[in-house]
Amino acid sequence: MRSVNILLLDDNAADRRLAETSLRREKVVNKVFLATNPEEAIHVLSSGEIDLVLVDIDIGGHCGLGFIEDAKKRGVITDQIVVVLSGSQDASVMAQADHAGVSLWIDKPLNFKKLEYIVQNVPELFFSVVTKRKANAA
Image (cartoon, rainbow, N blue to C red):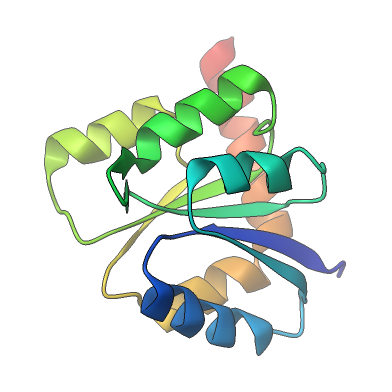
């Protein structure tokens, strides 16, 4: 199994620290890149190294879904697994996330077991997400 490079976009320092600590324990994680705002995240994504993108839905006055849509338009999010982190259970927001191409949704406060499962299964998730996208495009 290959190592996974992860980008975490979250403006909350405590949430970033907790998630980073959890992610670094995973043997399949190669690198964890941290971003506090959309501009930093775009810069990291431009490297082409990221396999999994974790995005807080509320990034200090910015909408995480807007960031995802913008990053896709710029071509820096292509086939990566995109996971939204949110405390919201609003069905309309979840529908917007699906429309934006979000692969998965994790509730806040962060469920570390769920996050660990996702990280450990990135290759399988990647295959199912790409297959779903191709089927939807046809």
